[in-house]
Length: 85
Image (cartoon, rainbow, N blue to C red; front, top):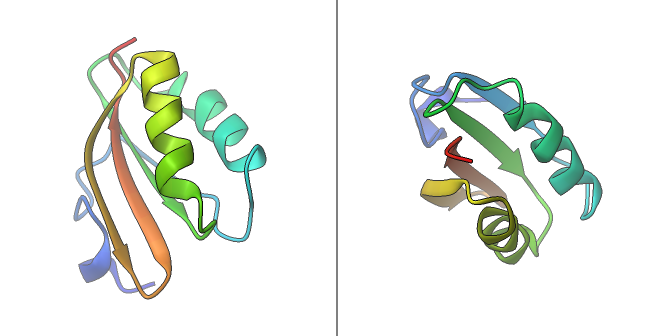
């Protein structure tokens, strides 16, 4: 993958690639991964599920973690999530 398209340009504490997975698997993997991110650290998630934007917005609201940035490039959605909860 070309890192120029990544949301964080390697600033995230952890990166999770859930491309090819649909909800609920992408959300379950993000929930598990963010537990390994330090408080106030960031998790970058890459997803291809067409409903990823809605799913990760709901995840953010449900968990209290904050989406700092999101983007889409060539069918891949990128989310930078701050571990605040």
